[in-house]
Image (cartoon, one colour):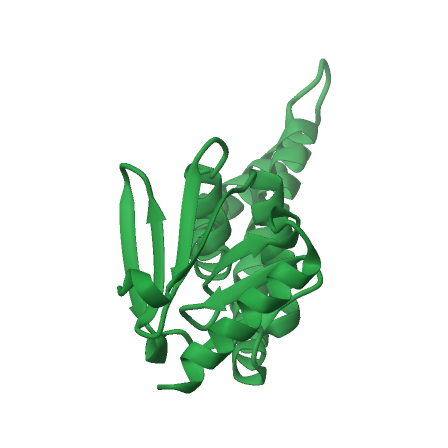
Length: 212
């Protein structure tokens, strides 16, 4: 990056600001991305419904069997014929209930994996943010005619040519540089001395991007 034409901004962010930026970014999702999220949610519901239905059906069957088994336990007095009939019914249901108990394990496992996959797909960025909080870290974001440079002392140095920066948005709370469909570097506006400085930084970024 040529330092002669570069603008640079040093700043730090908190986890709270990171979560806030993520919520603000939801406003700028493309229609295609919104449709993708809705489709993913619909597919998850379609898959959850039969799995939960099977789990609930077998769990209810086992609970009913256990309840009847407790009632079947002999007391001080019991008729032999009634006991024999209950015993035959218990033996007849035993195998099917045991099979339901085995299926219950697989229902639970399938529901768990589906929940993990859905959360991983839908909240991957949020999960990474929780595991790698930005608190106490210093960032430097620079723009030039060549592209966008994001640095963190001692950790990372990422450079994006302007064609790789899909959008630059001046939000009412953040200046956003999108480097993916739903991935953006951001600067809180209150890190600038005044709003005019943020506006100038934004306009300069647009001018640099327009050259490519």
